[in-house]
Image 1 (cartoon, rainbow, N blue to C red):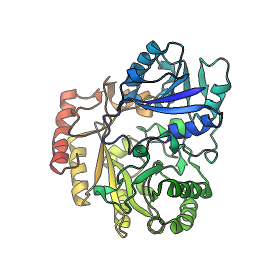
Image 2: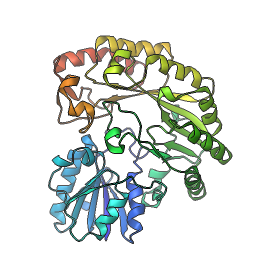
Image 3: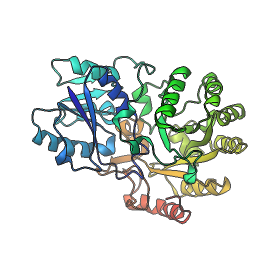
Image 4: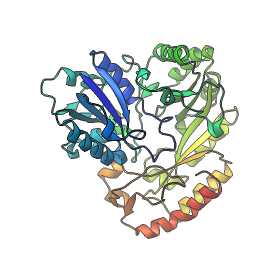
Length: 410
């Protein structure tokens, strides 16, 4: 059996290759265990009408890529009517009751085990549910599936800084998050659990990457791997001799002096912090379970070491106000934030904000949405609020948006 995984339109990302998801690569390893063939087709670089024949065409989708996946799938089905089309990822997991019937099979949850079930299944046209957590030490991402410019990407550090001339790549240490932010899909996908790979497994993968690609810089894609102090300590002890450099993300309430030292000594040179909105009342409303005071203490601790800080914010929230926008600016200025990323909020299906829209002042979600905030993308909130018009919401956001342009954050 031959599989082709189709990469949908990712033009909304600044560099989709450097942020390529490892999910498909994990699936490829599982599929190849079953002696099947796997290829990638990038619709960003190739005309979908030129896609070669395959037994199965696979798609992985989030909310704002789903419509393009449907569009591409219909073209493929018209060209190869006997082929099977499958869909997995965040969108099919959280919204599987509303998937277009162009897809023959739908995968809910992690799919390394269920893709094997699919291969041996005589009746493939159904939903595949992951009934128990995947053993995340069992599989390694199949990087041989990708061309070199997906694997060896430019620097993933702030300002293009690099610690080695051989590029960077992505890796995962854990899956899941134990928190329950109302805007996040992770609680529904991973049941508010963090599953940790064995450190020996992580070390093995890093050594293989170094030997195969001579890459020593890594973007760790985990939600946060710092929730378990003993895990970070063991990582420190075993990563330090490898002479690598990495960027990761964590929560501000999991930053301690001891941990910062361990992260730095094991190669961490940049940490992303999810601030979201610099207002304590707004943070309570979105159930972030942090305070601005904790965020500022985390920044202070990190600055004791030469670790770059990247702050993540969301705009277009149903809690946006003139005050929250002013607070965002004051936080950035007060803490001298030089590097920040701003996302345009989308309430993904299955999240608390999607399931209880009225509670969060969300009247509706726009059809054409985009998660990124950038000068090349027209700026508009992705939601219509119940408590104000779209024009009023945009009026609130506009001064902050102009500030971001002036400061060259976007």
